[in-house]
Length: 164
Image (cartoon, one colour):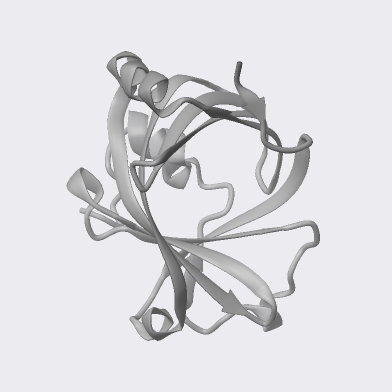
C-alpha cells in the first residue's frame, strides 16, 4: 500500500533561471533525479520521481495559480515505479538537484541533462513570499508562472529557448 508522505501542503513556489557559477561552491547536497509524467492537464498533473535510483515518489499537483498549488505526495515501491515508466507521456527528465541555503532558506537548483542540457533552474518553496531584496545575486530572470519552465511542460513540450 502506498504511504502518504505528508499532509497536503500549500506552497509558494518561485522559479528562476540561474546565472553564473557562484552557487556551486555553496552546494550542501546533490540528488540524481529521473522523473516522468503519467498524466498532465491544465491545472493538474501526476508525476513519478525516482531519487538516486533508491526511492520513488508519486506526486499529484492541483491548481494553476502560479505561485501557489495543492500538492500530495506518496512513496511507492521502486520496482513499481520502474514498471510505470513504460506509461510515461513525453520525455523522461533527468536532472541533478543541488541544495543551496541562502538566508536560512533552501534553494533547489536543478541542472538538467539530456535534451534539456544547459538548463539550470532554481526553485524556492516557502510558506511566505520572499522579497526580492532577500534573494541571492546568482538568481537570474524569474520564470514563476511561465508555463514553459514547469516540469510538466519540460517533459511534454518543446525545449525552451533558454536551452536552445
